[in-house]
Image (cartoon, rainbow, N blue to C red; front, side):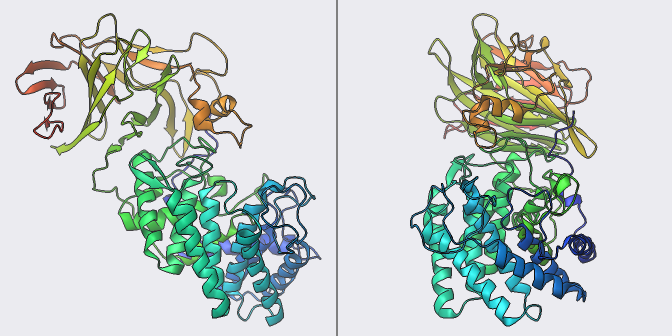
Length: 609
């Protein structure tokens, strides 16, 4: 079974001017064939996210006219713009809308659904989107629409801004992408208003960003991030926030947008596998955006010098939003407009910088969570998630059902490159059920094809084993599909176990249930509103790789040694002397220094091929 949303890398899409002209030509033909006598460009099946969609296609047609001067377009733009201003601008309060701070203002807004009071909760983001579509039309309207119609659109856009910032709470869904989008709308609107009106709008937009978004960023994996639906990052909306930051910087030149975009871009780079797979988020676990992310990933990938375009997008939305029949939908059209207008080229090589929360070499990568436990491992085209045992999730030694991966003190990291090898040593103090403090030292080494993991811990009583991951997905050409198989070799006995029980809180990788589906089933709120990250944490047990201790370890240590990737002989050897623990494999020799570290307590590691 293929995963629905993670398909080909976004940088595989042609992005030349000729390619974009072909996209706009296709949109033009679809729109002209769809345009109703009333001027409506909405898809016939569109029921929600509808308030901005006709105007979004109008903006695309205006851009197409600017580039092609197609004589059929001016009339279509005028008629469709008139439709939006006449039929899709609401001024009476939507019954049941819970986020108003002033009633009966008469200010214009856009609706998430058209039916009165049916689903008013989405009116704030719909109005943000309508504002963005409107300012894009204003940017390309010179010589295209009459002065009177342009003036009416400008007044409506200004009204949208006032409704968003005066008549309602700001960012009521705690969604960073929506909030930054609102700021972008204000910055773009300000350029079209007379100075006495435009400067207060610009100033207010910058203040909102600084006080309501930037000041409330959430720290994860060493980065400060705009919060998304109550969490630090969502792998669908995070790259969309990056696109909004790119547009904010492009049009304002304000350095804070560049600084925050750089930080978010480096964070995405660290959590994204070499193959572009990612999962996790407080709104979606596996759903990926597509064209909505291109601007940010391309713009900031170039700025930070990393191949962020490896991010796997949903190719069904590769150019623009579509409905089930493949027909264009105007939702998010502003992102395609900006993407076409921006001339930044993809940066296609990996960053040469070392990142604390990532190990990456060749086709191998490990993304580490905030506790420096692997959040995602990639080797030989297979992706491994942290496994679960007794409601505990991660990679690490297990004794009597207790997983030793949660740190009790500072986690220290040493990175090294030598002889074509890339390595990371993680030293983590942990406490077991017996309350004894131990040090788990995990060495990750890759030659770009295989990943060697060696874990050493003070000798444990009983029968410990290493929880070494949950094989979950694998690359299948331009798609990602589910798997329950793994190419893993262990120095000790290796088992692939499956949950002994059934039910939503036991995840069997052999089933057709996806991680996202399982996570939503365990979330406290309905799908689409619950927090799948929080739900997944309720998982009791999962499919898991379990490796027994390696033979030949020093007397005072338990050492676990596994290799992810191509099969073959694997007989690591270990020795302990005054220099530390020596690990010899068929590919390298590493010396892991004493637990105490150097004079500053930092881990010591030497490595050679």
